[in-house]
Length: 412
Length: 151
Ligand SMILES: Cc1ncc(COP(=O)(O)O)c(C=O)c1O
Image (cartoon, rainbow over all chains, first blue to last red; front, side, top):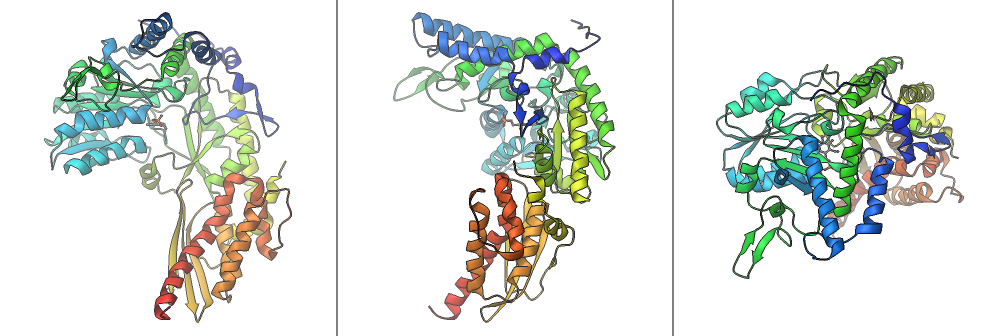
């Protein structure tokens, strides 16, 4: 299917769907540029949550009564929406989780641990979020396996030849971010998967950032697992998605035990439920899944190709505009990047930047962005990060730049 | 609304630009590391305590203007003070930066420049990092004294 991006992305219409964008902060219009942390929610998502609790609320997969049936239907419809969004082959390959972090932990625990032995290796990269580091450290600690880290270059690009070199006979899984939250780099995911598969190494892609900036097709990528998190996809917090290939999911033991994930229980033994329920213990975030459905519909109707193209223009505009600020240096300059402007300013700590621009109503993130190793790689204690979403505008970036000039004024 | 100038007063900007006592102390008798995991601010505080008096004090590290200026001003304020005075000053400083912005606070001389952080609640930790590090360093001092003095 080819999608023809409309000539003009109607950002005003998009903005009108996000009620929070109308509010002021400290007497100034809100300029929300902390989207990599979490995105704002459009009205249809808010409506879906309200509608669920006003009209449908019941537990799923349990009752024979009308409400439970309807809630179950809506919950399962959300799963099938997620399947089409990521183009998974089968709906049972979609597991609802709380967030991306839980998805990675699930794979580390149920897929990796049983395969790892002392001396085996897990391969990640130097720009992973802590969520894609710590679960592997835990798995390595428990099994005596070793965590290997593929380096990145000065622009923040993964060094593919090094990555390839590190794929050894003992590598049991590679887990790589599809897009870096600290630098914006988009990784050549398809190539990564190809290199790894050539050596029989399964690949998890962390799509926390990528999934709301570009179309994702897990079959085209060829990955074994893909994780995403609802609250960055313009959906609610507390709902995430794990895609896993049927063969893998089938062979994996459960992650959490409890209701819903079993087909029968006696005190002697329990039998696991079929996919994907084996991995969904306890009452799930039903409203979250249903609202995520609305979010994915919204994102799809905006058009991910159009969103990508628009955000790319915005990124280029912002990149150029920031050059205007004396002593500002952008960290993360890979040609293949999206929506992240991470920067430092001579003589000014990122926190002070954050406080001063906040006074102008501008929300950015400052700190290490849960990616301390990236900060170390670039020799900075922290950065300031403006991160874009489809509702941001050039005018907002102008406000940011003016606020950064104010920072320069204060610090001289 | 709180003005930015309340936070970034000239004296604070000056201490940020030219931090005082900003070096390691080879003959330190006490030392502690302060770390604010939220923002990654890190500092090492060195004290040389002779007979219960802070004979010398210095610090190193990286952090925002507020945490750096606070550390710098603290070292200035501590030199020559007795340990019990320093401890009392910790309490007074702590009270100053945590009292609600519309209530009056004690005048702590130059340190009062930092009272502006009260209007910026997320920045209170930046101002208090050095002081908490001081407390940690002196706590070890207490331990050493209790042992050496056989309490
Ligand atoms: C690249 C990346 N991975 C993982 C995560 C973790 O997402 P969550 O906290 O929703 O699990 C984030 C979000 O901060 C991220 O940006």
